[in-house]
Length: 101
Image (cartoon, rainbow, N blue to C red; front, side, top):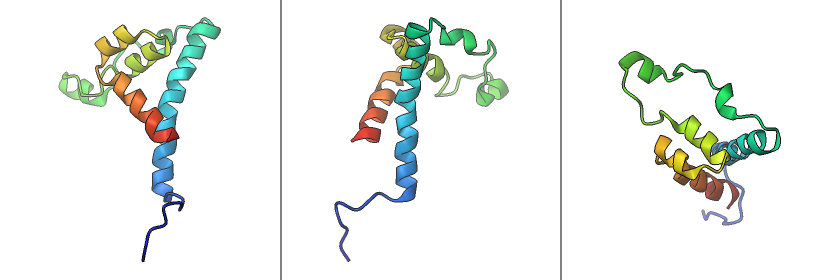
């Protein structure tokens, strides 16, 4: 049995690609909020941490700061995004490549 190179990806793989496409779309959406509508997305975030791990242990988890970093990327503030979470830019670049190639 051979695998056809032009066959469609399986359903879980398509769902994963769809999820990966949501990351850059969310970053673009925060940019639209900021640049077009004049709404700062940071004002829409709650002032308390929503991280369950941090709430229980009082230790930041590996994902802490990622939402704010992605919002900063939407505002084209790459320096702030990298300060908030160093993997934010690589995550978006990987998601774009994975979702659309």
